[in-house]
Length: 158
Image (cartoon, rainbow, N blue to C red; front, top):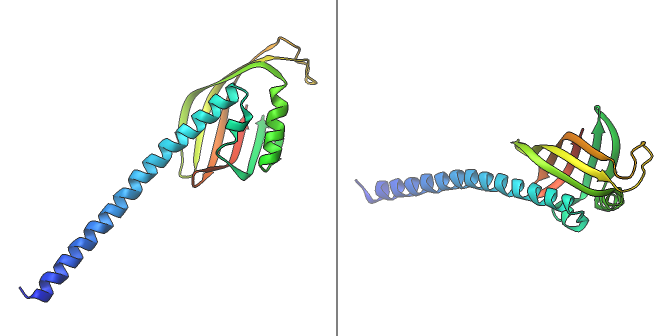
């Protein structure tokens, strides 16, 4: 075998190895990214339960869109991190306690959807008829949309 053929074979072999490593590295990163996303959502839920708005917003895009749906209709929408924070801080005043428990997680290429059991104790009388001390028990679903490692949209459904 000539030196040229030997070198060509070596270059092709190295090229294939590098391609293989890049491809499998991407898969490992996707798994890692999914794990990271799940951890981000768990941290978001933990912060939500603790009324910690600052921690809730750590991984949100500056342009985050938040939607709350009830019976398939948008009942609340915010656009941008400032509107989201304002609404989250306002909601803190409505409840003595609140807890979301994740009951399932499903994933897509750029989404992560959780189903939750939700329980809250109302802190003050609310315009919708709920009274101070009332307990809410709901089941819901939240879908988080990602661009890279940033949450760009949250859709809460109940």
